[in-house]
Image (cartoon, rainbow, N blue to C red; front, side, top):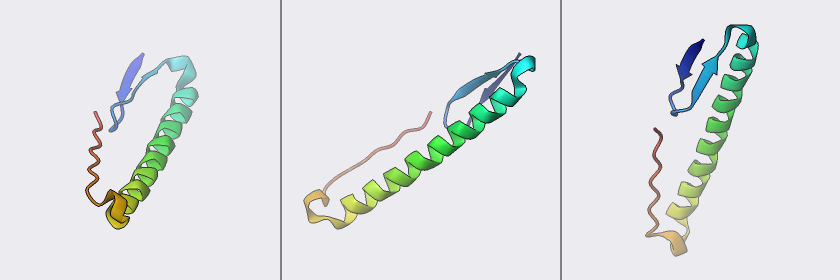
Length: 63
């Protein structure tokens, strides 16, 4: 059994008999993380350029 920790803090436990599943899980989490970051970039863009949100602060933490 091997424990993998991704940059975004997710942990994956990889068992020898399910290595392919672990790879698919890793790819899914990476895709999810990329999608979330794209959404957050859009939100930050809107907060910056819409006057109703000109004082908005958004703090994102990844563990």
